[in-house]
Figure 1 (cartoon, helix red, strand yellow):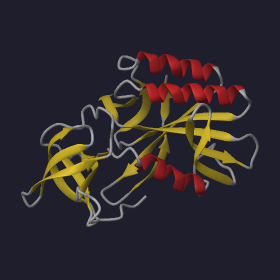
Figure 2 (cartoon, helix red, strand yellow):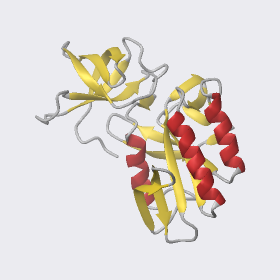
Figure 3 (cartoon, helix red, strand yellow):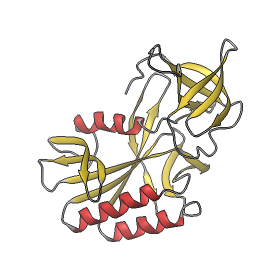
Length: 232
């Protein structure tokens, strides 16, 4: 997924109210940017952090910049827009580029369970495959990405819905997409959300599969990367 508009470098002043961030552009101007991330963004929102933002000239949008990346200034990046993983994964699924998840028909946002929508439903080649996707950005130990970065009742509900799907005979996949370029494995942050950790254990016992991939990230684009080890 290529960014529609060339990104611009900036420095973070502060992130607040979940979806807002005050930033300083390269020319010294201070503006407010949209932050498309409802999570805690632990370790990613420190004052002075180098970031990349996408400008827009849409008259309908009040905020003229959107925060897309954290630049760790060591050759590595983290994507902070939680809508990106589904867009990047959709392209890869449509092209048949995701190992273990290939099917003639790929449909996003399909209703299932109790008032839920599965991120992707793959069909036309054997049992239907229900795929839930979670964006992972937390890293507290070198090389290890963790989910979640805050308590997530919604994430727990998705695990319960996937369990029902698996028990009914379809394939159910919990896919963790790591929006970082500095991690080689994924784990669950059970100290942050023990209920989610226990829910994942129950889901796996019910037949839910776990997959994990990283992303190739640059200020030009974000694409699906390699499969990662899951430590759970």
